[in-house]
Image (tube, rainbow, N blue to C red):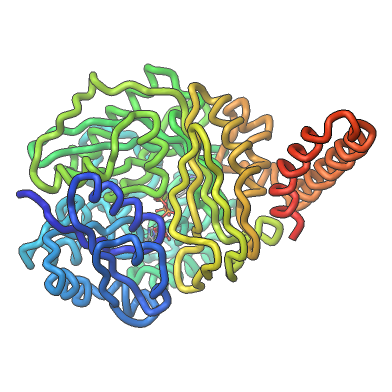
Length: 496
Ligand code: ADP
Ligand code: ADP
Ligand code: MG
């Protein structure tokens, strides 16, 4: 069925990202927004916009009735949920279907199975997919859980089955801490996800996070669009992602890809989805979870595959068969994404809200910025603190990295602290350069002092340039002006 008008049940960069593809397909767009987002960029971008309610997402972006009503008012015939909010809510997907609207995503059944980490483990068990050693059932009895943890061997991880966004996980190194950590995990799971089911699995030491993008249509065809490596994380949440991984061989890539396709087949998956794996020392891999939605870091896959994932999602939702065949897909160069969060890397990556007094995006060859803000806007405290995603694409990994460094230096953000200085640090780190980095990267290599150190080095360099330029001024005045202004963006961004 042809889609004519899409309501995007989300905000910020992802709402605009989805609307862009819709517009290219000649499809009209509807934004929804809260009172805190009256002047938001996604509202201005859309053809029409509907106010949902107060700032708190529980009274706006998460209210199913209001979103359905907004569809009725505007005559939208399909809903794209983006990521976060209602994107992995099976009740919502079911309701959309019942109302005779198209949900741009998988079936409610697939969401239900994969949205629950335990149910997903059970589903993939018979599909030749390696699992992290541990349980596939919830546990509430502490004594029994302790026994299982002993059998698995420490360190272990206690996880909320309904967890997401890096929340609801606890590492236990020492058996004597198990009881207390389990109690905390249960109450946290209940408070954060409204579901107290927890389970125990082996904590894989020094792992890599490698995930595979899949696309499936409603006719049983499933393909994989290679992997993304997302091991640079803070608080178990990604900050830097890249495609392809610097370490996978073509043979391993095929193995990961085929395992991901099996995961998708285990729940009759259609739409775009991501199968996340955790990889140990020799890149042996275990299934972590499947995200039944568009992923934050999907642009790096788009850059290397040339496939617009949102357009594919829309065509699949219309019932069309996939036109892309597995053997047609090729990797073109290398892409890196850094997440620009309104957070202070010098202060434990805590959120830093405020106004974007200055906001100048980097430009030029191989640079893509997906964002949802303009200069002068405020970053609201109510939602995820991500301002933008900066993506670079190059003919190889080195070019993508050098381009990222150049783009970060060009990015001018004033008024709010961001993760950019941290990402700049990552780009030059020997472990990132040689590809051996793991999810422990931040813990092992990052302290606020390294940013201060970089700053001192750079100031010395600038002082050196000025000293040199002073002596050369009469000869090369044009060069002097150029190098001064080239440096100034960086200097202002760091010295706040
Ligand atoms: P991705 O999984 O796409 O790589 P994140 O883990 O950062 O990225 O999740 C994307 C967004 O979705 C974030 O805003 C995060 O807070 C939110 N999110 C993901 N899963 C859940 C969940 N189970 N409950 C609440 N929010 C979630
Ligand atoms: P979420 O739904 O919050 O994204 P995941 O299960 O995908 O939860 O895990 C998020 C991150 O936590 C992983 O990328 C990894 O860094 C870490 N992690 C999760 N499970 C394990 C494990 N068993 N061993 C080591 N690290 C893990
Ligand atoms: Mg995950």
